[in-house]
Amino acid sequence: MEAREEILGRIRSAISDGPAVPEVSRTYRRTADLERDEVLGLMVDRLEDYKATVDRVSAANLPGTIAALLQDAKSYAVPHGLPAEWLEDDRLRNDDRRLTDAPGSRLAVDELDGISVVTSSAVSIAESGTIILDGSPTQGRRAISLVPDHHVCVVPASSIVQLLPEALPRIDPTHPLTWISGPSATSDIELERVEGVHGPRNLDVIIVTDL
Figure 1 (cartoon, rainbow, N blue to C red):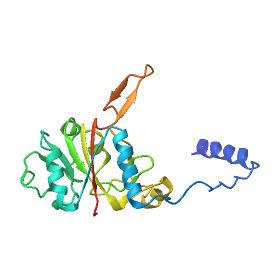
Figure 2: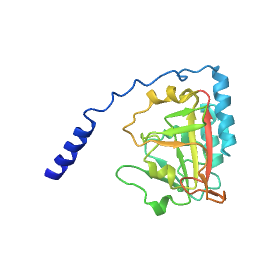
Figure 3: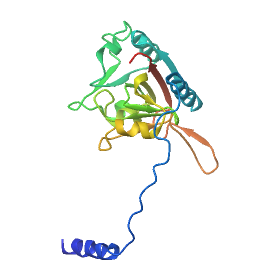
Figure 4: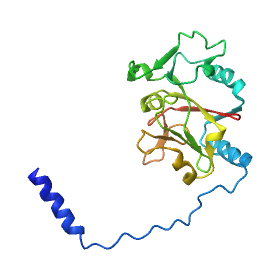
């Protein structure tokens, strides 16, 4: 503790006569200047540019769309708070492929590796094509959206905003946030593209127009 206090004391002394922090200019755009349909169109355009697949459906057609996207999955994970009605398609009822990740029964990494996952999302930013997950019960902990190879992400249209400054008030910075801009992809120094290093190799986004 003595060493800690000595170090902190030196820091306080060093910055005691420092310049005042300048006021940050807030002249950047903070509100949308596009119509609602234009914002949704921009989100779709950005996602497709990132090589994600996008479906725009009504809430009534959501279960069937999820079932179609999972038809080839050997198994799939869902967070414990995912709405049950999203899985009400006949192909998903009593599905023995389904693995539920819950606080008391967390799936191991080897169970998540190479499978599919279905989550909701907190807020999305059209300008950058970014989907944000905040770890709430409908989205689950970070591992279930980063380890699987295939992510089916449900995005309510009402949660899509145009700009980053519009998105920030909708999220809690103390939550474990995952920011997704398309399927995971990176490249080495020789610009060789590698997919699936930092997250799912395949991203299917379902924009629900009436949620």
